[in-house]
Amino acid sequence: MELGLKGLKAAVSGGSRGIGRSIASLLAEEGCHVSICARGQENIDTAIAEFESKGVRAMGRALQGREGDAVRGWVRDTVEEFAGLDILIANLSAGGGTNEERYWYRNFEIDLMSATRAVEEAYPALKESENASILIIATMAASETFVAPMAYNAIKAALVTWSKQLAEFYLPKGIRVNCLSPGPTMFPGSNWEMIQVARSRTYSAAIRKQPTRRMAEAEEIARSAVFLASPAASWCVGTHLLVDGGFTKGVQF
Image 1: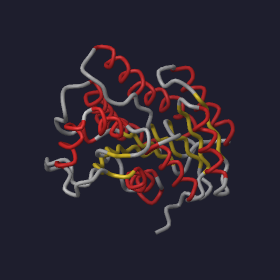
Image 2 (image 1 turned 90 degrees about the vertical axis):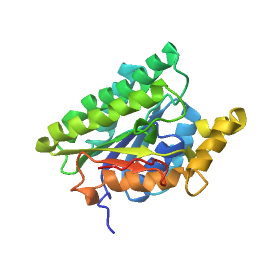
Image 3 (image 1 turned 120 degrees about the horizontal axis):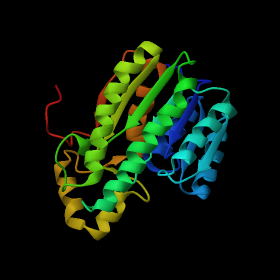
Image 4 (image 1 turned 60 degrees about the vertical axis):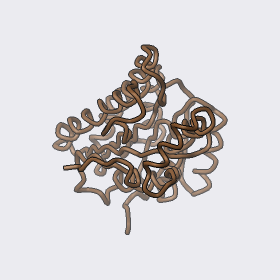
């Protein structure tokens, strides 16, 4: 199936490793020019070299997700460098943590506010695109109780609701908005890699709940994300897609 991505311009926040990196890599493989932002410049440089080897233009910016001006500046520079923007994928995250107040601030500033700031900054360019698409990356932990009360789960749930509201508001302006929630995913440097060592019971419990008795690989999540963001998914608007290998048990009406 032709996804219609060749020549389009995409920005992926949190795109230097894990799910974000896999999404950006698949976009580049489909002929999409890609811009990423993340914390570490070394990982960004490595990712950019990989993307460019696929014959597309690529750029990246090291920044802290809680710094609003930095996030906005990355989006502005992407639009300027690419002379436009077609796809924005909001994937920056502070990850999980406890229910302590400091984690609420971290997840609010990084997961939620980086997404809202990026969308706001990208809007003028996206409304000029004929294939405008926004994809918000949340988590299956926003859909049902998981592990323990924590900021990560609740803030991601806010993103799910916000994405649906955006979809209704932006579609008349020619911009599709959708949300994708991955299940537990293992990749180098992931939270689950740390949990497997430091909290083995939590890790084992998650594996037991997974029908396949394994966690997802980042590329398995990325394939669904790239489709949902692409022109091939033109009739998907306001969708909340759970990509969790059957982990969640609730019926999605």
